[in-house]
Image 1 (spheres, rainbow, N blue to C red):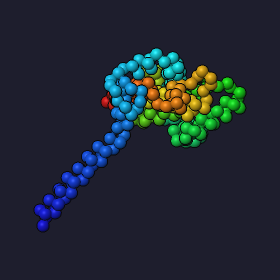
Image 2: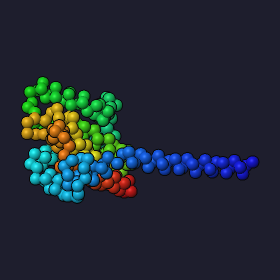
Image 3: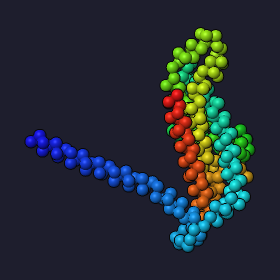
Image 4: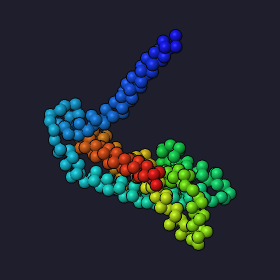
Length: 271
């Protein structure tokens, strides 16, 4: 009787494992098949998305000679670089302040600092646009940077806070007992330990800033369109292989940044 039950359980376990493998395979197929199709047709010699006529790199070359898309890409890189740089400083100081110091309203401030993570982008975009209108600040690349700092700051704060939670505060106390000033203890003891979390958070925020469409669409001015906004404007007349090539480049760049971020985060845990 016991042997029969064991055989039955073993057979059920094998079936469950087979179904798990099938389900995982279908899930990956569902997620990545459109990307594979996009990548294949970015090398299609025909401009038609339903007709294959041969391999070509012309669409990648045309993208590299498209001044409008290159200008938008430059705007996106500028916005992402500046906003992430500002968010790296403010986010790190915010995480350290929330973890190491106590002040009235700390719980409320912690919740407010994480709000951009859960508030819909459309709400942030409208609120930011209304704010710029009320302050009569003209829309430009600068307003896009200001808006992007808001959500980049939250992402950096969250990642640095998670890194900070695993550190022993007694190391800083030991540095202070040995004669270091609070600034020296932060720069020479705490900051090197936080560096993996800071880099990982910045890489995540950089990708999200490059990917943002809604906020940039609302607060960008004339001549300051970012790459997602420029792509949205282009697809109104149809998706071209040139945009396919651009999308493949962005996917590869995002994957490389994600891999780097994960490597840095794991390195930080090891150290």
